[in-house]
Length: 639
Image (cartoon, rainbow, N blue to C red; front, side):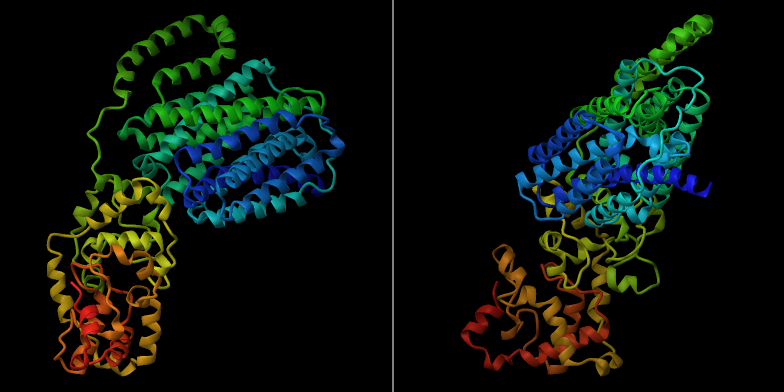
């Protein structure tokens, strides 16, 4: 008995592995990788079109010469192709290599899905294939919404997706057991063309809503941003998958698809209204899981198909047309319209409900007439307000705030200076909490892995922010922040810089008073050492202040004032007549808090001992003013 149960769980594991690969890699990580490589606009569309074409062709060709005897080998080959494609995406791809990898992703997925579904009853062995499909689907959606996984860098997501595919290869052994009987339904499944059109409408709706949420920062913030939203989505997806299996077992595929289109259609309509986004975020994952389980179960067990080859043919046609083509149509609708038209939702509902209408009309024609009249009256009153309202164009700062939200900056940066703490010296003045809560949405942040940004516009110039987005680890020493250079392939980078540059309070200048009074304590000076200062200088300062530094070489001509070579003396901002001890304090203060109104940033994360070390080393390196040469004066006092 235990061995039989394990064989059933193996089918669920295979379904989960394929779904996780599709959801987290093909839909998310691969797109992020392409964006990080600078692909945008037509180039990005070209790559994604090649994935869709590869998936469609593989789905249609997979049933050729399909036999149970080699289904395990086919699945191993397909999962290996999925893993290899994910790893290849980590390479520095050019356009044509990216197109080739995208096509490989589609081809591998196409072969994997058709092969797995066509023989799912045999992978499940003595287990229930329908419930195994539901469990695998629900677990996949739940896993993809685990916050640490969902918000992980694209490279990590790609590696994990590849490892899961490799692990799934082990679940294909031993060979599938003899086929089990079909899962009984209370009513026969509708004709295949009706099922195909119904799934096409559902995938179209789902893909359009998915794309719109992804590309609308306000919607994304209210549906997918934050730990609470992600856990809620995962649990709702899992619950929807279990509900789908119950409906498919106890009722029929007709009822399941009807429930799915009702829930998913309602979510699409509610997304157009800001006040209803919360409800839409609850309905959307349930509607998606309801039809997703049916999409796996129909060709596998619900279609009453006699052999694996016939099931593969139906699955291939279903996934090529409803899956890949429906997804492309939905994304196209989202790109061109920016919303799901209520009329299209109505047509989709009619298409999906069509197989139910004859039986309902014969039995409940009076009730159906009353309901139709009520729905028509409600539609007249309700559809008008659902049309997207015209809004004034967003300012650059407002657009930048949306980019900040959509890129998940809240996961590493806070925007809240804690009153009465060292935050006030490091990051700037406090803001009343009531004002923070008035923001829509508030951006206090999940955790502080990087510096607080609530007053960053007073501490950093716009030019420095741009340099930092291109090469964080170079500009900011040992920063763990990834590069966001891809944002500058369009206007998003400039918008984000404008937003961050705007983040400072009107009373920020008062903060400078505290900074001007700061100096390392006697204990900090006692612990400081010039050698430690030299090391810190090489890590944090040399990139700009050495002529051969990486930032100096790349951006030197764009600085408002070129950073001086500190080996000849920073006399532009220091008092040359000051004693050595005072110079050391001045340098330590500049190293930690920068120079207001310039591109010279502070390094607030430096401890007082570290800042004192830099001060000691630099004060000992710069020549006194009495020995300045004409070249020294030229570099040190550059305008």
